[in-house]
Length: 320
Image 1 (cartoon, helix red, strand yellow):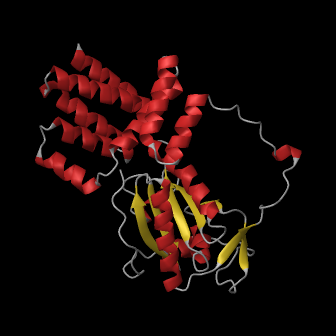
Image 2 (cartoon, one colour):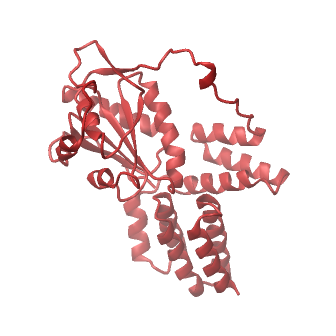
């Protein structure tokens, strides 16, 4: 669940990332900031992988172009939707933005530096200073609004350069060619298109149709669970959901909402534990709702995940 995006302010009061710059070992041919106006600085790609070791180069590039920072982890399900969307959107800006992706499990220093307490966390770096953008998965339209604000802030701070990907326009060799993916089944394709335009109700309907036609369609079941979670969180704020849950610990609806928030932010165990702890105190209708919600969560997180296996055992003990 994302908190509302506040208007971007100035860069004063940000966390000092200069120690990362000092630790980084930059090669002699590393790109440097301060490209002349009108000249696009060459970079390997518009999407780069950031690490604890190379982040000094990112800080230098941020003196030329705003850097969008995507902090993610393999276990974070919302990251798997947001990260590809960020790549597409950044590329739409044609070199006015650069995206750096950071696996916080592999790069804990950067995760701490950006205060990535929940995932996904999206930040920016301008002129060597960090700027908070948002936490959680936002619809693409809202992401573009945030990036437009970021470019406005960059202009105020004199960061108005551009970058050009060195691999753009190069014809792929036979060795670079990847196998052509098989097309998605019709209802899956319609669901993906609906998600892209933010029409979650239509995506839900498409997945339900796919399941009705083939109850063994596990991808449709997982897709339905994921898009249902996103749809439930529309229009809700992180603070509002948590405040409501704290004020009414016996209110099932409030507890379901905060469990959704926890799962969307990557707090899988917290989400499971909240509902499983509440389960014994509920009437049969409430227990049915919690069981159904947990089964959705299991689809989102993945059946092979150890935390899912533990939660399944705990739920089975409560049921029988």
